[in-house]
Image (cartoon, rainbow, N blue to C red):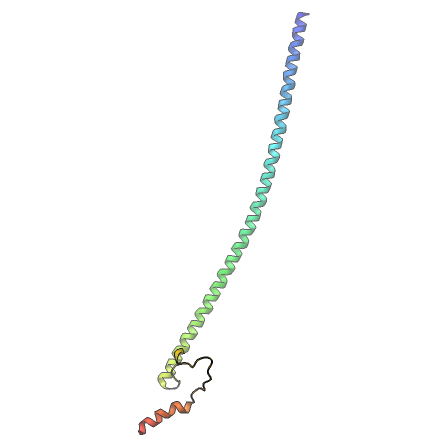
Length: 135
């Protein structure tokens, strides 16, 4: 009987220890499952944020490329206009040297914007030249 009682006590103790271990294992399993679920939610949110940032970056890069193209087009247009102005200036200077065009007036010699002034006639510009050889 003593042995049977000791064996039963040992069995009860081992059974109790096993039950505690199972509860502990179940608790650890539940805790690990919850941590895994939290980690998966965080990963999902991180992936969504990555995709959102990638889309924003792609949009910004496209806008930047578009701006660069617009800038190059504007610079080419400006260069073309500057060349046109330069060639127009050269043509005007050539005409002035040949006496075919009046000299360019300085903006300071223009009448005030509120006054009415008639432009000089071609005859009045030619008259002094014709008069000077006879004088």
